Image (cartoon, rainbow, N blue to C red; front, side, top):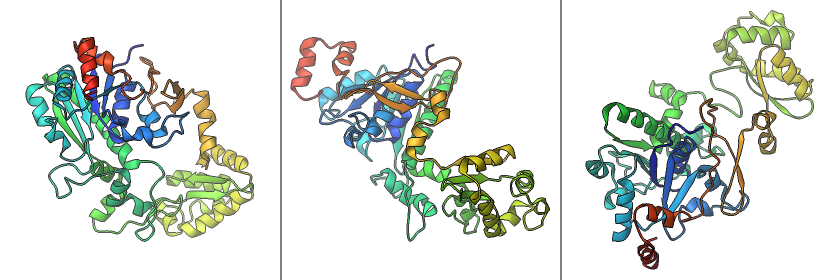
Length: 393
C-alpha cells in the first residue's frame, strides 16, 4: 500500500516544530524527506529533553519517517552538495532565521529561477513586507503577539495553552499549502513559492474573537471551560469529583436537556432559556441548575444520562487517561518506530485511508544517512572522507 506521495523528494532545513511538523505530514504520506541539519548538533529540538525513551519528545513526534543529512550550508562544498540535492527535489521547506535564506541563496525566487518546477515553502514568524520581518519568532512569542495567551487567560494574567499552537498551526498550513501547490504543478507544470507566517496562521485560528473585535465589539472571553457565545457549555463536577463537560449547541438540544436530564420540561420553552442568546444571558442560572443535577450523580452515570438524551458530553481526562484512551487504543492510533536511543511511540496523524498506511519509518539519528545520500549524488569514498575531514558534513 504505497503512499500517495511516494515518488516525491522533499528537502528540508528545519528546526523545532513548525517546519518539521509540516514535513512529517508529507513523510507520513510516503514522500522521501531529507532533513538537512547542522553538523554541530543539528535540529535543536533533539536536545530539549530525553523523555521519549531517551529521545527528545518533540523531536520524536515531529521527525519520524525522515532521513538526516548533516551539512554546513555556509561552506562552498556544502552549498554545492545542497544544490545537487535540490536539483533532484520536488519540494523545499525551511524555517530558517530571518534573512538566512537569501544570504545562502535559498530564497524561493532564487531557487525557482533555476528550478521552475520546485515548490518552495518558507515558514517564518511574521512573514515579509511588514515592520516585524526581521524578528526572531518562537511559539511563545507568537502566542503573545497574536493574543492567544490573553484570551486563554487575560491581559493581566496571560496563559499560554499547553501545546505549541502557533507552531502547529503554521505547520499544518505549510503542509496543506504544499499539497495544493503540488496539485497545481500537475496542472500547470510550474512550482511556486509559498510563504507561511506563524502570526498569520494563529490569526486565522483566532477567527471568532478577532472577527468580533474587527467589527467594533469587545468579545466576551471564555472563563475556564466555558464558551463566550454558547450556553450551557462548561465543565461540572460530579459526585465522585470528576469533571463532566456538557455542550448544548442548539435549541433542540436544549429541549432534550431540560426534559430528559434536568427533569424540568417547564423550562424547555421558557423565554429565559429557549434561545442560545437568552441562555448566554442567563448562564449563571443555567450553570447552577445543571451543576446541581450532575453533582448528585457519579461521573459515569452523568455521562450515560447525557449521552442517552442526545447531549454532547465528555469526561475531563488527565494525560495518562488520554494515552490509554479506549478509543485510541482499540483503533490502534499509536505508531511505534525506531529512534536513536530506542523505540518511541507517537500518535498517528488523523487520516485513516483505505488506500495506504502510515509507514513506521525511524526517527533519524543526527547525520545517519549522510554518507548514503552523498553516494546517491555520485560522491566516491575519498570525496566523502574529505567532506568529513573538512567539517562540511
